[in-house]
Length: 610
Image (cartoon, rainbow, N blue to C red; front, side, top):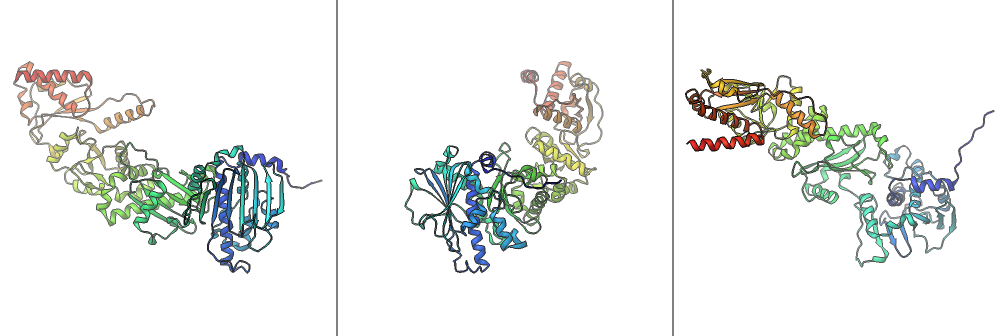
């Protein structure tokens, strides 16, 4: 025989759970209560707009929510002049846990279009968050219908009393919630603490919110709301000025530096979200690249930097996103598995790529002016997301050692006559200045890749364009630098063989630049492997096994110093050849302490022989 029924929960058992586990942060109680107050106003406004017979004579103006701290009475009171409740509604919406008045209202008045109502509370537990910080909660409410005012009082054990209240206890219309703070709520007796919470969670709520500390009243002709009911991100981009965008950025993020640029997001069906994303100005590579994207739900703050909504490589952005399709009590697991969130992330990626391309095409000088600030962001994005690379490939710039910028296509097109598909670059303009000047002399442009991420980005391009190869200026000499008639000079090879390692090859070349006696080149593959091992070590990981460095010492037969070594006495030849090789090492790396000591000794010795 089957028996059917519903699981019952005693109120005295559920209330302790609510007090301890409803929200991980107790301060959210104020967000929930103020959100409910805004909902009450939004409901009444909606009835007015629908021409409800009872509400049509109420002017759609003067709506507000007030938050009052009374330290002497040990209370926090939140009052609205919205829709209010009758005794029947109090019993239905307040006395029954998890029955959301917002959902009931939407079903009754909005039908299938309820998602556009702007009503915040879609759950039903929000009101009970008051008991996380209160020993007793009083509700004084008067319905817009003119029904008699009602008082509801509930203690922390869940027992309540509903009674009539005097005319002066209840607001003229709307609801007052009086929270008598418990020991758990002592920290919220401070005016500064409450204002901080209101500023964090309620900065953009749709109804004007006023805060008052009864123990610290100030005479004000016209008190100002603590929130902006029509934040910039809700407006049409065409109605916003550059100055408004900059002021909004400073106000929200307290950053005195102007952002590089911004993207105003306005996505309708099927995504339905709004927002503004800013590219911040980074002063140095050592500054934190972590940004701050604030997530809102119908103008109610939810969280900072929800990584599942913003692609990882764009987390250095600052901005606000308002996503009314997300639940207010959003969880990480929900975000990770939400198709809606995935679509938002893809939409943002596309908009960022479109913005970069548009700036490049419409005002390239201005784009180049901020490229150094953008470069790390964009290159990292390309490394993390091949689709982002494909969308931005036409506007990716490289800095030239001679000054200015170029795209990879522009560089390759200019170089096809002298070194087709080879891209020469320097990692340090100072230490590699000698190499750069040799390339300059032959009219060969060198690019500056002076950050670790730059060389990783270069490898990405090589993987995308199989015929293109990046070579550091000290890795290979361009063929156009070499003259004709190079031949080995008798005896000179032996002078250098005893100085170099077994992995270093010695060659003779007649370089067009006769001022340089020798050049030490380290193969690009060897140097990349060495850089990779250094990176592993820096990250505290076990580096791969040692990799022999393949190098080539090129002796310039066009240089008088090299050609004279064949006729010099042994002592002089040894001293000069050693000095030449050490100078070549200096152009490649820092000398070891012993190498530096010996180099200085030999230099002083040479000076003494002059």
